[in-house]
Length: 355
Length: 232
Image: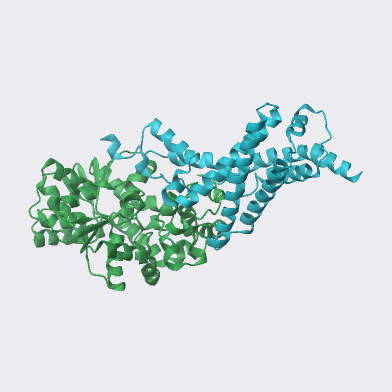
């Protein structure tokens, strides 16, 4: 991409469309000013952006603000110590694999007993399922796969890629490479990613370019929608309370995963309400771009999420569903901060309670 | 004596300097624009479409300002009328360069109408910038608007006083100098040349860059071949 920032004419079309500028009203958070700063030097303002790319959607020249944000973040990545440490932990798992393997296997066997589901590990299979840390990302998917009698296995690594948040693509590739080698070793053809926005984007939009191989990349929500359509999974009972769905920027706007989660929700919800605006024009929750993982950014996140809190309040929904771990944490924090009353859940996680 | 001398410089010497600055500047600017490399992100995967649809998207964004239409109708009316009237006015000037004869009643009516639309939308954009966009506006934004405004006002003055540009613009191409005998025309010519020389260097470069940025977004990257949904 060439110097697209040079085309900015400061028409102001992005101003009302940036949730951070809307809630802070600060000079440096207006997208044209953010560009002005980041073109000259790498400033901390790069970490005060969710990289949701909503401004780019509304820009007549599609100026890629997030490209400048990424470049700046890579230069000053040490200002986000938490993220750098998380990347190090991720890479360490790859280097010290034997040690990690033993602990992981023990944990999974424990989960198997606790929930009485079979979770295949280290098995040559057609499907490699990549979860996150936390059983809510593993158990619902395992139930679905077992119901559909799929030939699947669980990955030893978590899907998230913290180096991606640092704008360091070389490092992000290294983090992904662990899973790539695993998938090749297991002869997997499909890689199914759990409910995680940025991870799905990394797998779907970057893997082909990085590794030159076409795995079939799917999100667990796409798989669930497919099972429901084919009648492999049947829904028993339904939810009468109002439900709304939050489109994670990385899944919807940036990877095109828009209709599938809605199709799943409509199977178990009687009162589904859309937020306005929605789909690829949805507002970011304020926690994206790795901000959720940086403890010092908590206060900023709560301000940035003001627009999202208003949107949710308008729908009067009792359940806010989403398919992103970042968004989940942020939505829960927003609930406390803005004194709202709703349950936060993943789409497939809630679906698994009705099958 | 001085006036004759000034006329000679502004009308028959300066245009060559202006043209040189414009073309050299444009090449330099395009080179600079293309040589900055940032990571390419796959853009808006939802836009995976057929060739014809992509073509339609491209043109509706470049010529109809669809992106602005989708979010701010008021700005769309202003900016679209502004750009279209400017474009047709420029075509009118090109006609005079090439010496194409068109019915005079028609040109004076159209010129007047477009001139008024251009001036009004330009003023509204300036007011909008001062009232709403001060937080993001730079000195250059005001400079560009005021320069355009001065060119437009001097042009309107010529139109209202029935000073014709035909002879002068044609003489630039043919090389046969004429005596214009209007200082208003000299002022308009000078301001217009400043505008032309400035175009490649500042924000007005967007008039060229828009074709490329939209090509990247609506055309080149408007597909995700890695998308499983297309493979399936």
